[in-house]
Every structure is written in C-alpha cells, then in structure tokens.
Image 1 (cartoon, rainbow, N blue to C red):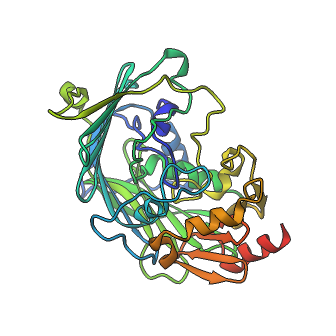
Image 2 (spheres, helix red, strand yellow; image 1 turned 90 degrees about the horizontal axis):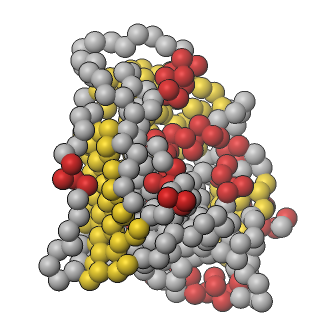
Image 3 (tube, rainbow, N blue to C red; image 1 turned 135 degrees about the vertical axis):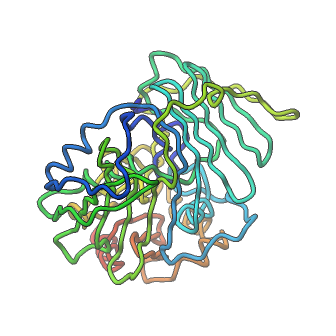
Length: 385
C-alpha cells in the first residue's frame, strides 16, 4: 500500500485516512468450513504476508465511548485544538455513533473512498497523479496534481473535511505496534466477517493501569487481511469501538469508479502541490486510529515534541502550552464550544474529557494530556510536568 494514501486529509483528531491495498484475490472459505488451527505466531505471519491491492467493500465504524452524540445537522467546525484542522465537534463526531464508507482499490494508483455522512457524502478519488476531493454538503470540489517526488510524503488538502473512519488495516497496525511483553496474544474462536471466515487474534494488556481490556483483530483465513478490529474497555459489557467490513469483494472494481466529474454548479479549487517532509499535517491527538505509542511521530501545533510518560498501554502523552502565555486563552476558547463544554467535566487541573477508552485532560494553562489510562494518571502527569 502506498503510505501516502493514509495521509491525504488532515488528521485533526481523527483516525488515519481510509487505507487501501490489502488483500489477495482468492476464493473465500465457505461459512461451514472451519479454518485450520493456527498459533498466535502463525496468525501474525498470515496477517503480515497479505499484499495485493484490488478490492471493493463497505466499511462500518461504530463507537460507544460514553460521550454525548452529536445532533443531526450540528456544525462540525469551531475553535481548533492544537495541530487540528477541525473543532471539538469534529472530535465528538468521530467518537460517537456510526460511520459508513465505501472503498474501491485497484492497484497502487487507483483508489476511491466515499464517506457517507448523515446529511452528505465526502469523496476522495485518486487516479494516477490526480487526486480529487468532493463534499456534497456544499457541492465543493478540489483537485490536486501529485508530483512523483512527493508520492510517499504526507499530503494535506486544505479545508477538506477528514473522513471520520479508520480501516481495520490501519487500526490493526497501530494496536500491534503497542503489543510487547506487556501484552498477552492469543487466538480466540473463529469468526465470520463480511461472509468470510477469519481468525480472531486477541491482544490483552497484562496490566490494570490501562482502560483497555482487549483488542480482537479478525484476520481473513485465506488472505491474512484484517477484516475487523473490535476494542473492549474495562468494565464495559459491549465493545466501545469497532471498525470492520460489512461487505467485501476481491474482484477488481469497474474502472469508472475512479473517474470524477464535478456536478453542475460545484465550486472548484486547485490545490497547491503537496509539501515535503516537515509540513504540519500530522495530528497531535490520540484517537482509536492514533495510539499513544505513536508519540515519537506526534507534534504540537508549534512543532515541538510532546512529553511521554509511562510505556506501552499505560503511555501518557503531554503537549506543552502554547508560547507567549496564550495557553489559558486557548483553553478558554476551546471551552466556548457547547459540545466540548458539555462533554468535559471540571477537575482541579482544568477540564477532563473522559471516555470509556481514552481520557483527555485540558489544563487551565493550555497543556493537553492524553492516554488510555484512568483520569488520575493524567492528573498526576500534569502535576509532575
């Protein structure tokens, strides 16, 4: 998979962009045929060997983290968080409810993602050197010509809303990157995803210092493709997050799927060539698709590196306050957003945005602490910083 595809849109408090290029064209196992038994190491090997890039399917993401759901039609813009391209409502939209996308891929240079919002559709179409962004909500389109020298660099489309969805491929990679000696890796009961038989690779932290209870990765028994990622939090009867295919075809999509013509009346914008390494497109927020273990890749809005305390699943990432004493003003501005104000509770250090899986502490002086840990761990990190 071309690494650039994960980063077409700004990642402001959203998972990595819909990724493609993950499976081998093969005949799926019939539902009644049990898969041969495999050890965790064998399932990991199977997962790591998938490589083909032709498929189409529908992906569904469901979140139930205990946050208030964004009302239909509510705006998703507002005061931005550090390094973000969207406001607090965009964060809450991601972390609540259900999101659906259709994905088409045919080789490394033909990909399309259609994210179905509640009242609109957003598309990203990549064909060879041309990339199109379209938002039906305001009938706007943008075009980007991709230089060959930049195809493996992070790309940013200014003012284009980021699809609020993550692929099992990207999520599995993030969680597996955090799996070390502190993680128990087992193979659970066989499962069915999008009509395909899959192994259930389960990751469970060997510590009580995290909100995470278990991650189950459904690995296709034939291709090794991650078909679904299910996240369970401690003390919760139901999964708090799940992203997986509800339908999947390994046949090459029709070529017309990668064509784009702006609808009548659409506003058109030509985007500048993508910036090279060092541009500010990477996000500093931790989300289900951007795990605390990624801290070395994160940057504060002013380019500074965050402070990292703890290890593995107990990692806490702390972002410094903006320079020139603007931290308190930034926090005050963020809390003017009614959605964030409703979701965040007052604590001695500032405001706490608490979910079943991830906690975010906004201090009164503008610092931000994030982690899949209990709130008192964030408060302790803030006090020690």
